[in-house]
Amino acid sequence: MDTLQYPLLALLFSAVISENVALYYFLGICPLISISSDLKASFNMGVAVSAVMLITTAANWAVYHLLLQPLALEYLQLLFFVSIIAATVQMLELFLDRFFPSMYEMFGIFLPLITVNCAILGVSLFAVLREYSLVQTLVFAAGSGMGWCLVICIIASLRRRIDFAAVPPHLGKTGITMLVAAVIALAFSGLGELMSGGL
Amino acid sequence: MKYLRILWEGLIPNNPVFILALGLCSTLAVTLKVENAFFMAVMVGVTTVASSLVVAAVRYRIPFRFRLLSYMLIIVTVVIAIEQSLRALFPEVARALGPYVGLIVTNCVVMGRLEAFAASHRPLEAFFDALGVALGYAAVLLSIASIREFLGNGTLWGLNVTPDFYIPCRVFNSPPGAFIVFAALLVLVNWLRAITRRQS
Image 1 (cartoon, each protein chain N blue to C red):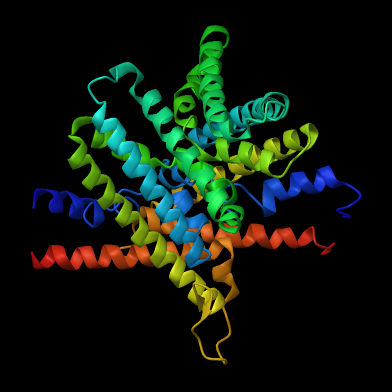
Image 2: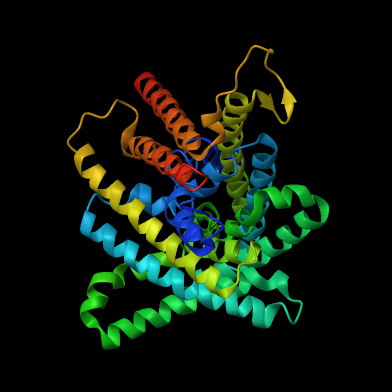
């Protein structure tokens, strides 16, 4: 695969696999480590995070480039980003509750948690910091969301096995999940070699 | 004496990272070099102390329903001030830390202290509690960063401390190394706690 020929595809691949938000940038680690070993719940949480990430990153990009930059108020970006994320989550919750009650049942409980998920804010900050265009921002946000969902599903299904395994003493649930994450991170960063001329 | 005990509580028995498992993101992400970890620890410490003082001072005036929103606004204000100062005083550190400075806003260590302690105590007590937690956080950050920089680069704060024949183990420079070092330290802390519990 030639990275220069398909820059958007390369961006998507690095966002999902080789520079995964959770395993490369360590964003949104807390829910990964502490969530139950329930695969279905983890998948629902991953979908909710992906959806909110896509919406808020696009909204934050627009606010930064159309409002803050022309007015030279870049230093207020944190204040605006945090408010927009909180407002989006609140609106999404009301919207789902009103029009899609069955989806609200599935995803609703995770929405308040998402407001303080650092992956959401982190992706918005990265998109602005790297001066992505709107299309690049959308691809980056979608890829990051997918990557996060992928990792939380992998860890949840592995933890179902670990629950029945004999974990070394003193390591505990947190420790063994960290080691599992380390192995997955090694594999993912190895796949990154595909982009730098492996194929 | 009372204040010293509050300080100690946050430093070891209630250590934010190892005991309460809060603030994991920054612990893993900015521990590549001791220098970066030091600046991050200072900034998180200043944010915790300043926002705890403010919240404790105005705790009777914050309506219960809007308390999380109010805490968030106070934290954001402090973080923006710190971020701007860092950019002005240490531009290359600010570049190395990138978005992680802004992400102090969502660091659960800060929010956790406000909700669990500062909202129900006097400013002086809140000050010592925040200071203890900040020191505990800094201790974890600096120890992880020292191990990673020593094993991965053979240096400490940019100074060469290993003999010439030492071959750096590059995996500790990469993200998986952070997970491994964290798990190893967690085992050490849990083992020490088990020993002290058996003795007492």
